[in-house]
Amino acid sequence: MKKLLLLFVIGTITLSSCKTRKYRRNNKEIEKEATKANPNFTDYTTISYIATYKDVAIEEMNTYGIPASITLAQGIIESGSGNSKLAKFANNHFGVKVTSEWKGKGYYKDDDKNNDCFRVYKDARESYKDHSAFLKRKRYSALFELDKNDYVNWAKGLKQAGYATNPKYPDLLITTIEKYQLHQYDQPESETDKLKREDKVFTQINADIPKEAKKFTPVETPPSNQVINTTSPNYVVQKGDTLYSLSKKYNMTVDELKSLNNLTEGGIKIGQTLIVVK
Image 1 (cartoon, rainbow, N blue to C red):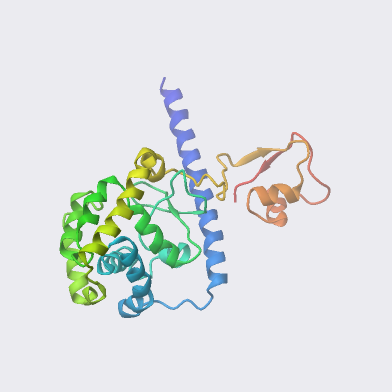
Image 2: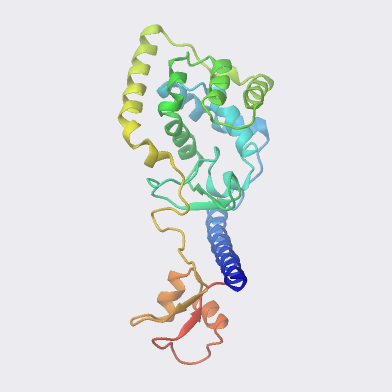
């Protein structure tokens, strides 16, 4: 019995180690792509972050009624004013995780669990727009009845609805808003405009209620298979496999694959076991 338990523990540790290596390789690839796309990234100050993203925050406010001050304050707090690795490499400013409906790539970091999977956006504006979509669901629906410049009750309501576990989260938002005068970007709306906005938003929320569980429940890996799905460090060569096809499948170069397996001349053979985890 003890031997079986020991083997189970060893197997669990090995599987966890393989997953960690897989996630690390995945992140390196995403970081490489992000650096290539933006080789001259310069750290934001909070002031420059606000200047960069206030327009999209205002745009989202006018569309859905989420105060621009709330969105900006959340971005500042959750992304370290745009300087966190998740913001820098994944353009993810609000910590939105991958769900079964997500069609893009994933970036791994420890959060509620080890190696939680977060969405990778093409640009930060997508993150801001997805943040609005994330809030448009039943648990936050009462907030959309508030005036779109009522940042105090939005801050309190987010905590009450379970957005954050930190009991001081409303205070963090309000303090950030008032310190940087983010409420200057909030705008009042007429009663007629408010009713039109509410009607539109609640129509969308009600339509999504039947599929909320699927739409908002995090998953371990993106369904798009953009992340390499390798659970074993070894692979048995099948008919039709080539060094090139396997290098693409396991996100490495042919030379890396040959080096790992001490391959010098010739190709590979059916039934041959290869190491495929760096």
